[in-house]
Image (cartoon, rainbow, N blue to C red; front, side, top):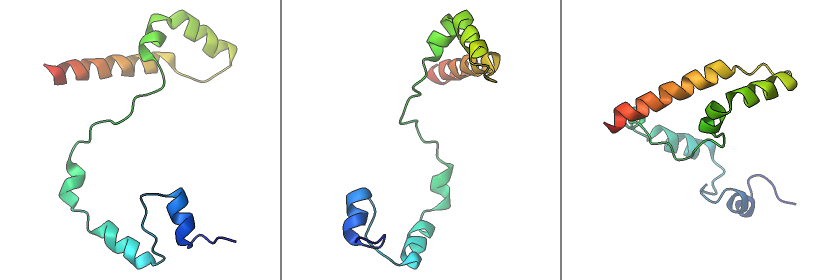
Length: 94
Protein backbone atom coordinates (compact mmCIF):
# COMPACT_ATOMS: atom_id res chain seq x y z
CA UNK A 1 0.00 0.00 0.00
CA UNK A 2 1.34 3.45 -0.92
CA UNK A 3 0.99 6.36 1.42
CA UNK A 4 0.80 10.00 0.39
CA UNK A 5 4.33 10.53 1.70
CA UNK A 6 5.70 7.75 -0.48
CA UNK A 7 8.31 9.15 -2.92
CA UNK A 8 7.14 6.82 -5.71
CA UNK A 9 3.57 8.13 -5.44
CA UNK A 10 4.70 11.75 -5.46
CA UNK A 11 6.88 11.23 -8.51
CA UNK A 12 4.28 9.25 -10.41
CA UNK A 13 1.44 11.75 -9.91
CA UNK A 14 3.28 15.03 -9.43
CA UNK A 15 6.40 15.02 -11.61
CA UNK A 16 7.45 18.57 -10.70
CA UNK A 17 7.20 18.13 -6.94
CA UNK A 18 10.11 17.15 -4.77
CA UNK A 19 9.63 14.10 -2.60
CA UNK A 20 9.94 15.69 0.80
CA UNK A 21 7.68 14.94 3.69
CA UNK A 22 8.57 18.00 5.73
CA UNK A 23 6.00 20.79 5.70
CA UNK A 24 8.65 23.29 6.82
CA UNK A 25 10.61 22.64 3.63
CA UNK A 26 7.61 23.47 1.48
CA UNK A 27 6.87 26.59 3.50
CA UNK A 28 10.49 27.75 3.30
CA UNK A 29 10.50 27.28 -0.48
CA UNK A 30 7.29 29.26 -0.83
CA UNK A 31 8.60 32.20 1.20
CA UNK A 32 11.73 32.53 -0.96
CA UNK A 33 9.73 33.97 -3.88
CA UNK A 34 10.43 37.72 -4.08
CA UNK A 35 7.31 39.82 -3.66
CA UNK A 36 8.33 42.09 -6.57
CA UNK A 37 8.11 39.15 -8.99
CA UNK A 38 4.40 38.79 -8.17
CA UNK A 39 3.73 42.27 -9.57
CA UNK A 40 4.83 41.30 -13.09
CA UNK A 41 2.18 40.68 -15.72
CA UNK A 42 2.13 37.08 -16.82
CA UNK A 43 1.15 36.35 -20.39
CA UNK A 44 -1.79 33.97 -20.69
CA UNK A 45 -0.58 30.47 -21.49
CA UNK A 46 -3.95 29.02 -22.45
CA UNK A 47 -6.92 30.01 -24.51
CA UNK A 48 -10.55 29.61 -23.60
CA UNK A 49 -12.32 26.65 -25.11
CA UNK A 50 -15.24 28.94 -25.90
CA UNK A 51 -15.37 30.56 -29.32
CA UNK A 52 -16.52 34.03 -28.34
CA UNK A 53 -16.47 35.24 -31.93
CA UNK A 54 -18.90 32.46 -32.87
CA UNK A 55 -21.13 33.41 -29.93
CA UNK A 56 -21.13 37.03 -31.09
CA UNK A 57 -21.86 36.05 -34.70
CA UNK A 58 -24.65 33.64 -33.67
CA UNK A 59 -26.23 35.68 -30.93
CA UNK A 60 -29.83 34.61 -31.65
CA UNK A 61 -29.01 30.89 -31.63
CA UNK A 62 -27.03 31.23 -28.39
CA UNK A 63 -29.85 33.21 -26.76
CA UNK A 64 -32.34 30.50 -27.79
CA UNK A 65 -30.05 27.83 -26.35
CA UNK A 66 -29.82 29.74 -23.06
CA UNK A 67 -33.62 30.00 -22.91
CA UNK A 68 -34.13 26.31 -23.81
CA UNK A 69 -31.74 25.22 -21.06
CA UNK A 70 -33.39 27.61 -18.59
CA UNK A 71 -29.92 28.93 -17.83
CA UNK A 72 -29.10 32.07 -15.90
CA UNK A 73 -26.28 32.90 -18.33
CA UNK A 74 -26.00 36.60 -19.15
CA UNK A 75 -25.30 36.76 -22.88
CA UNK A 76 -25.18 40.56 -22.94
CA UNK A 77 -22.51 40.58 -20.23
CA UNK A 78 -20.44 37.94 -22.03
CA UNK A 79 -20.54 39.86 -25.30
CA UNK A 80 -19.82 43.17 -23.57
CA UNK A 81 -16.76 41.71 -21.83
CA UNK A 82 -15.61 40.14 -25.12
CA UNK A 83 -15.84 43.52 -26.86
CA UNK A 84 -13.89 45.17 -24.03
CA UNK A 85 -11.20 42.47 -24.28
CA UNK A 86 -10.90 43.04 -28.04
CA UNK A 87 -10.60 46.80 -27.48
CA UNK A 88 -7.84 46.29 -24.90
CA UNK A 89 -5.99 43.90 -27.19
CA UNK A 90 -6.14 46.44 -30.03
CA UNK A 91 -4.82 49.20 -27.73
CA UNK A 92 -2.01 46.95 -26.49
CA UNK A 93 -1.07 46.02 -30.06
CA UNK A 94 -0.87 49.64 -31.24
